[in-house]
Amino acid sequence: MRVSRNCPWNRCSFCPVYKSEKFSVRSAANIKKDIDLLCKHAGAIRQSLEGSNGIEPEAIRRAFCGASMI
Ligand code: SF4
Image (cartoon, rainbow, N blue to C red):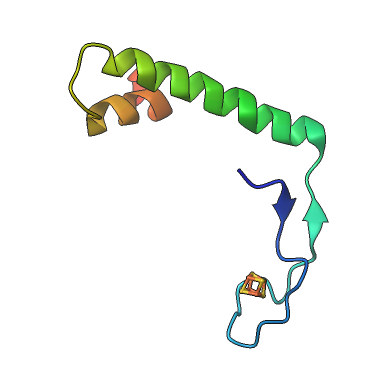
């Protein structure tokens, strides 16, 4: 999980990724929202996998996209 945006170093000559972006640290409230969302999805995946022998792509899709997207 990312707790910051962009790169605080931004000096690697081979890397063009964040050259025009300003580094910032995400707020605790913003990070907590991501943690809560991940917990929700992890719970849904765990529930979908109960009794199965492995991770099924459909179970992951259901957990992240919701039943209405199927
Ligand atoms: S590779 Fe890019 S993102 Fe990684 S530290 Fe270097 S400049 Fe930053």
